[in-house]
Length: 162
Image 1 (cartoon, rainbow, N blue to C red):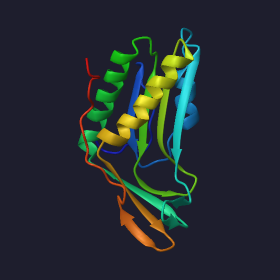
Image 2 (spheres, rainbow, N blue to C red):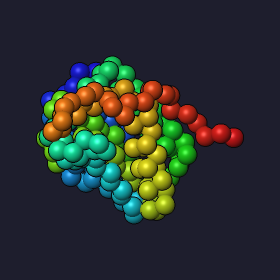
Image 3 (tube, rainbow, N blue to C red):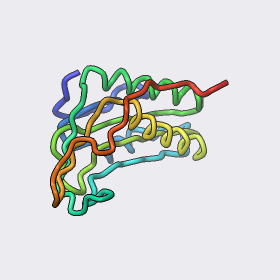
């Protein structure tokens, strides 16, 4: 999938995307609201001005193995729905390209009838996205720059142990 210039909400209950444009955080939260869902949880990951051992972070740059991103995001959404069947809507959106400090890099929004399921599914969404989706980060800070100092091997979305 090519990174779209803008992400627009789908007609269904799962919104997945990768974009070089700023992420539509407020739109994703509004989209997730449904009459049968009393809880909407948002996780918005933003570029910060430091990292362990790297003070003065000035910018981040994200690259992705684009053809693999949406299928892996879909697997995360599918597994979240299997674990928490009452989940209403799920948005998993990630940015590519150069981000300044304070810009949003990733958005996970989950709606559900109750907060317990919404929080659990949102936490699962961001944690699993970071572990399973092939997106890499380059940090530029006062002392240098590097791709993936904290890189980890990409794994598959796994069902919980029986």
